[in-house]
Every structure is written in structure tokens, then in C-alpha cells.
Length: 248
Image (cartoon, rainbow, N blue to C red; front, side, top):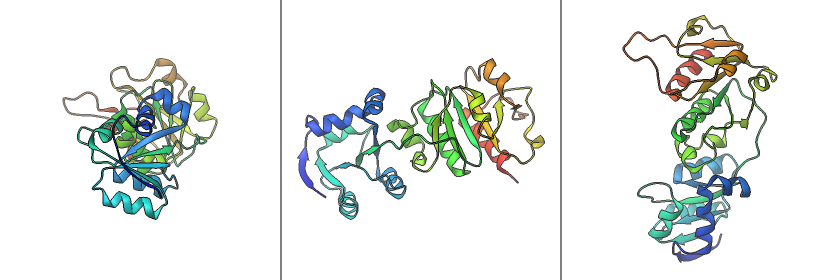
């Protein structure tokens, strides 16, 4: 571990790390940013040790963890921390980690994000997948699973959940999953599903799934609702359906 003196927001290493808030730089460098002690712990416990940690001068806990895991620690001032972090009042730490290689589609089941663009929803979908031992797949148009915002929303579940891209429903079927498209109405009720290895396909809240994705799926599913609300947030709906499909 190397502890360096406090750095300003203009420091070259701070500037280089802050670039990773942009998708093209994450893709180019195969690296991303994690923020906060929880994500730091999740990364380390998964075997993904940060290349470098940025911490405020009074952050003794991060200094201890950096020393324990032989991670380079750079002390920064509040201006630099604001540039590195994605939250309003950041306390850090912020770390730079390598993005794990994309994995094969795997898990007890699979949540497939079909163009879900909201980072909060995508993070929650990944966290839900992790809670039930499912994997996560995503199409073009889905918020980057490894963006700092999605990592925070997913509470670092990305480090333990198999995540990989897909372009067609058939790719999911070919690896042994029964594909189930979530639709607002007309789908099979949850109580009718038997035990199986399912891949739940969910789309944007406003537009839902495209017709061709629904047509390509083996089945459709609808959550019955008796109240005044006629639809649910995509991540909440996915949680309900995954729970039901995971029950023995």
C-alpha cells in the first residue's frame, strides 16, 4: 500500500478515474468506479480487489482496509471526492476496479432486461436476481450494469451475479431456459406455473416489451391486480414474479 498526500480535483489521477463515469471510457478501459464502504466490501469479498482507492484525510477505516488488502490509497480533498463520486454529499471511499469478463448465461433462473434504461431499475433487477440465485442478461438499450449508478442501486450484486449480453430471445432458450415475457394483461397467472428453469423477460415501464420479443417467448405472464393501479414499476413486478417462479 502507498499512501499519498491529499490531491485536488485537478490531479491527473483524479481526472483519469473520474473519466469512468462515462460509458465510452468504461468500455475502453474495462474499468469502473465503486463508491462507499458497502460496495468496497462487496468487491473485495467477490475477489475483485480495487486497483486504487481514493479517500478523505479522516477516513481511517478505508486506510485500514487498504493496508489489509495491499491496495494503493490516495488521500483527496472534498473537491476531488465530489469529482470522483456520483452522490450529492460523498464521504467515499471511491475505488477503481476492473470490470469482470462477461459470463455465460447461468443461474437457477434468469432476469432478462429488454432495454430497461433507468439505472435504478437495472440495479434493482440485478440485486433481485442475486437474492434468488438467478443470473442477469441484458439487451442493447439497457443501462450499463457496470455504471457507478447501477452499481450503487444494485448494492454491488454485480460482483456475485452472472451478467451477460443477449440480442435475441432464442439465445436464452438455447441454453435451457423457458422464456417468459412479462405483459400487462393476457398472460398466464403466477399460480399456474409449475417448477422449472425460467428466464423472465422484462421491458421498459412506459412501452413494455416489443411485439417480436413477446412472440418469441415460450410463455407470457401477468400479475393479477384488483386495485386501481393497472401497472407496476418494472423492478417491483420482476421481484414478485421471480419470487413466485422460484417457489418449489
